[in-house]
Image 1 (cartoon, rainbow, N blue to C red):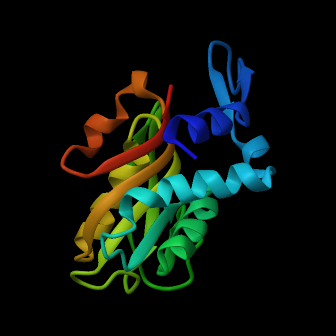
Image 2 (cartoon, rainbow, N blue to C red):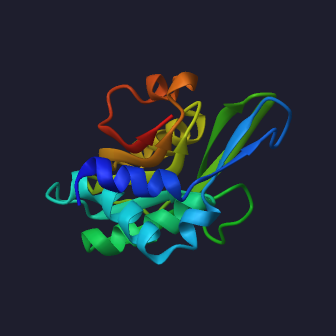
Image 3 (cartoon, one colour):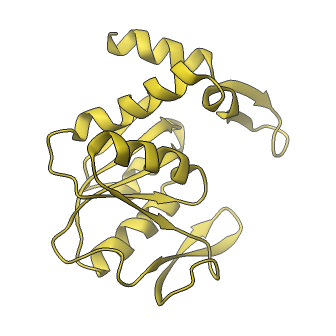
Length: 177
C-alpha cells in the first residue's frame, strides 16, 4: 500500500466533530479508526515504519491514547513499552514535568527506573497539537538519560505549530491537517 493510499484510508476512518469540546473547535475523533481492524493495523504500522531500523529499545506513550498506539508500535518494533501518566497514577518513585495548557499548567510523571541511560527511545502519541505534552515527555526521558531516537504521531494539527516545541527531534506524523 502506498503512503497516499494508507493516508486516505486512515483519514476516511477519522470522524470530524464540529464544536467539540467547545464552539469553534473541529475535533478529530479517532475512536472510529480504532474500531476498524484494518485501519488500526495500518495506522500503527505507519507510525512504526520510519523507526524500524533505528535500534529502538523502548517505546514511551503519553496518557491516554499514546498507550493505545505505544503498545502496538512496541510490538511492531519488538521492544518494551513504558507509560507516561498524569500525577498520582504510578505506584513507584517518579519524576515529574509540568507543561502549559491553554489555561494553566498540568504535570506528567514517569517511573524513575523506566528508562536506562543510553537506552534508545521512541516516544509516541495520537496527536501533535501545541507540543506541550510531548515536550514534557521528552524532558523526562532525557533527565533519565534516554537517547530519544524519534517522536511519532498519528495526527499533526500543523496550524498549531506544536512541532516548534520539538525542534531537535526526529518528528514523524502520518497525517497532517
